Image (tube, rainbow, N blue to C red; front, side, top):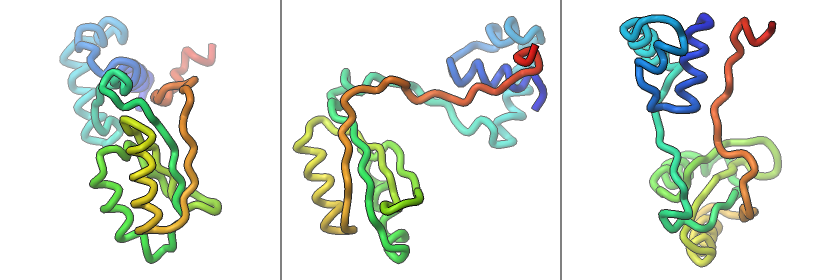
Length: 151
């Protein structure tokens, strides 16, 4: 990736709907050249997908939580497809420490979250849950440095 590719990635992480014209203006190259670079970044797997960031509260998901699950290695083949099928699980990570999985989940209510946790405990075992009061840094991309950033 050269500095133009990094600039394109930075812009698209901030606004995935940035037009070719806008990108062209910011990067000082033609729109067809921008399109070709984006295509190359997609084929290389650097750009994996495009997503809309939504206000969960406005669609009645008022509770966000992190649920840690203590799994035995033998449970992972059952656990992964199980949580993959639950749309309320918006991210799940295998981690180090006492709990091997950390899920970010969203639910309309604490009662719905409680039901989910009970199902996880009955099926897989011990959990620990932290309910989010507020989010000081929303999910964001990693800004790639360009050579002019070092000047």
